[in-house]
Length: 105
View: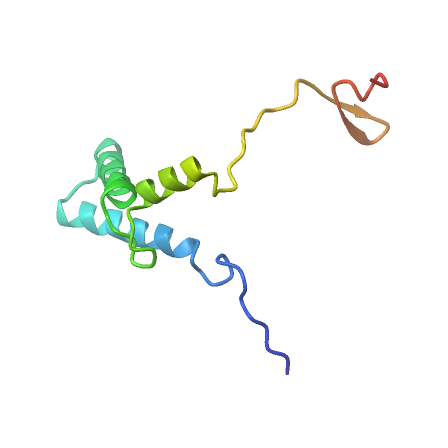
């Protein structure tokens, strides 16, 4: 028998856990407050997201997520990079080519 270790946050369930927690919290809040209209549910979700991202201290990092994220962006310690879609995509002989590649540029 071989042991396989979960090395990534996703494999450890750390990615799905906040979403499961948020979904449970929204459902419970709506049940307690007897909310059933979709617009009212969206308002509850928006309020919970704001609270989680901007006010609640994270149990592992000990920091508010939005403050931690802003600091990491300022210090350049994140993996977020500017993203732009290519101008045009062509399909040529079963290959995907970006603009300029199709005419040899």
